[in-house]
Length: 329
Length: 296
Image 1: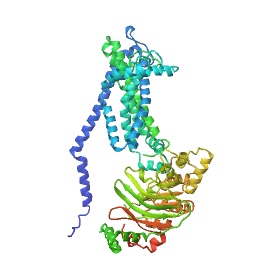
Image 2: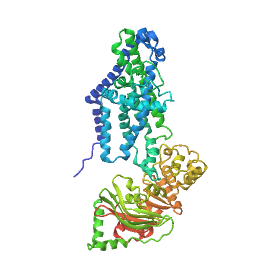
Image 3: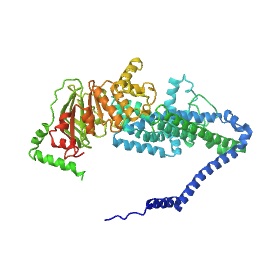
Image 4: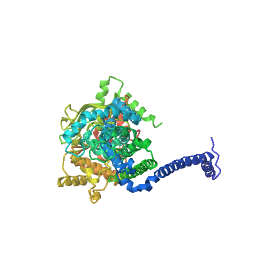
């Protein structure tokens, strides 16, 4: 077999023409335009959403002012007085309590599934948790209303008042519909989200890291606490933030158990309200335009709060990831 | 062609030792395993140690003695079970799912595979350095070295500072990092990171230091630094080093164990002798073929 000497520069010519074909092919151009179009649609939708909500809220903004609406807690449709402070507090408080309750459970589940569970159990537990994430929130709400709420009312709340009544958080009146009940429902709803993401993050911690600590004579617990969680912390913070975002926006289940009371109370056994819950609850009762506009104004504030939480989350993830371990990714 | 070579060699040597009763074959092999009398601290006596992954036997029964306060190299072609073997010496092998080992490993006469022995305590006496440097990225240089001490309940303060400094000096890293102890360990170069991992292992003052191909991810200069370090450490700690680099084994070790895969794909100890004997006058044909670069 003999090889003909190639024409000088042939390779370069072929490469050049191949490059031309790739960059100039119509499929590429079409796909690029298509992708750009979809991206623009999303931006357009977001812009329209903001515009619609803003115009809907404009009457309320004109009447109360965007910022004074946020710091006022009057909510009296009869006297045409509206302020969102109490629902903002209700939203933040219920979400915060939910996160506090959910995070240890979710991390425990994630560590159990990735590090401790025998393979047979691992699959079953992981599957069950994923199923929980797919249950519609109205079902959680019904369960909360008919099962959780009576249980808390009859068994847990009396205990809390008896033993922790000296704290301002546990006091009468306590009849089941409460911030605490809503928080517990929210916690149950965000556990699957947090644990599913934490599971992925924890699963990606390199074996070399775990073995490094094991070889120093660490127990499994010490490996989890000193290597796995610190290594995965940026991802875990991200998981928690996603859970928090879901808790802030969650509507139906909360509406059904929170009691929708328009006041701020340190007592978490008392009824309360969140931004999403009063919109869902009062939308159909908004008999005049300022009332409706005030509810839309609440929605606008909710959008901004979600935005702020997301920005804070990014900053937090970024700062956690870059300190003090430096360039580990 | 090169791929076939090992199998061919293996078969030749088998034929050479005769297809007779297996007992004879065992005796034949045993004669290639040097008897070591050592009373130095850190002596490891291995008796019929085998390692499994599920039902697969990765290491066939191994019996030999690693002398205390010396460097012993474990060499052999890829897949011969040398890493698995060394991980049995501090019970790291069993941390892999489905993995188990049988037989006895005696550290200064005490069986680390005993029923009541806590593997966690064993690993504090028998430290380990891995193929790829694995400093903890969320910890500073200081905290990396101190991490083992903290596990032992040593409180931070002057004693800890002293131990950390001593460990870093032992690992020949102190002069390079003394001004940046609070910086991340991962910001160091690869060779420095590996020395940091050695310092981390030395800080808890182990009897034995196991090194699983510690230079395989390093450049030649960093490799030489680690080899110098191994020689310096030998009087204070028993070192067992797995390496696929025969020159490295001949440079750093006092004793050398040669492992190879047998027909059942299990690793077995072919020959164990002083490093000089292994590299100049091996008793087994397979060892000779390997150290002269005829395969592997």
